[in-house]
Image 1 (tube, helix red, strand yellow):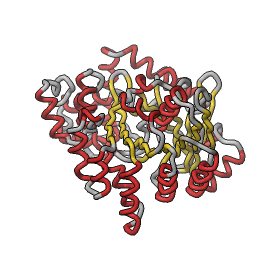
Image 2: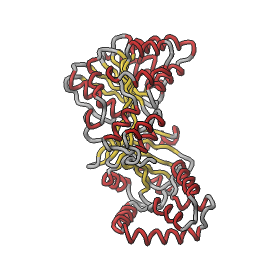
Image 3: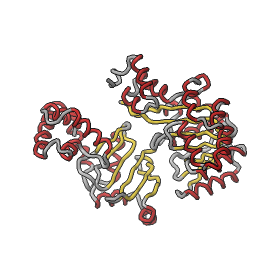
Image 4: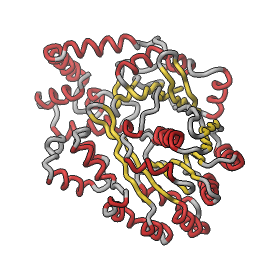
Amino acid sequence: MDESLLGSLALNYELIDDAQLERCLELQETTAPPRYLGEILVAEGYLSADTLRRLLSAQRKEVDRHGGPEREQRTQQAQRIAPGASLRTFLELLEELGGDELHLGVGARPTARIHGVLKTLRPEPVDAEEGEALCGELLDESLRERLQAERSLNRIHEEQDLGRYRVNLFQQRRGPACVLCRIPSVLPSIEELGLPTQVQLVPRLHHGLVLVTGPTASGKTTTLAALVELLNAKRRKHVVCLEETTEFVHTSRHSLVTQIEIGQEPEDWERSLFDALRLDPDVIVAGDLDVPARLAIALRAAETGHLVLGTLPASGSEQALLSIIRGCGVERREQVCTSLARLLRWVFCQQLVPGPEGQHLAVEVLRNTPAVANMIREQRLHQLGNVIQTSREQGMIAMDDSLLELVQAKRVSAGDALARAADRERLYARLQSLDLTDKGGVS
């Protein structure tokens, strides 16, 4: 269903006004599971069910007149994954569409994330029987029992000739659900990922802490894997990777790469991180460091001459360091700040921005210079933004500068860049001065 066409027709026939359409579109973006615009218009009382049927009929005629082949293609896709279709059929369609993620859950329509945008794949929602069958294809008996007991689990699923997927299964109110994220068969290079050249300096480090931060599904794990490959190609080191599930398999080249799968419980991570220090590592890839005990061990490892790479779920360098400091407790705050000031080397904060040809990486880069170290030690983190903006010659990059470059390169729209800006008004003024706002679709 063409949602933009439906809204335009409702406006054209004066069935709704601009404010009502805007409200329904906002509800559509924030409602889970996703709903069609027509459903929301009826639920909000703007249209009757009978009026919606007539409007949909007009929409179908308009689509047949201008978009017949595309509509037919969507219909054929929906028929392929009609209720009863196998999980493999869904994954084949995901591959053909160039999608990155597949969402399946009881009570919701099958949905794919394509170029960063969620799109429904068929009009019929997944019912309880189909949900059990699709999720059941990902589980053996032991995993089924574990899902029942723990309510969620993560694993890697491999589908012959299609590739590997990171899978999260969970129990929601209506029944089982899963999200499958496609893992690239070949790890993209630093350049292909769109990472800044500053990451090339990481293999030169002998000890310290490097953080990769960003929101969920921003590619942090892929960036860590790319850093491991960079070390593997340039240095003779022992790299120990601690992973909940192994997504990217590294073949030892110049470096010896040891990949260890550990459990999902916090104590498993902490014990494994502590045990990793006994494996004679030069580099420890510690994964998510948002747990204070895990971070304390990582700082200890960096203190004793190891290079530690980790991730944090944070929207910027300031937010990442604030989450570390606030999570350690008042009594240890000064000590942690002193350690961070001494041991931190780089913070790479990234987010994915959808564009017409796929998603593109915008990256903020913080380098721990003497000025930055003083701010961390004295807990003046609110000043980091100004330092990043004025220290490009020292290798730092502001998030808004990265977003601006993507707009200038015509990889993303100005609207999508502004939605992710740290300082929206400032970025908008810069886009206006470069005459990029109208071209990017922002008025």
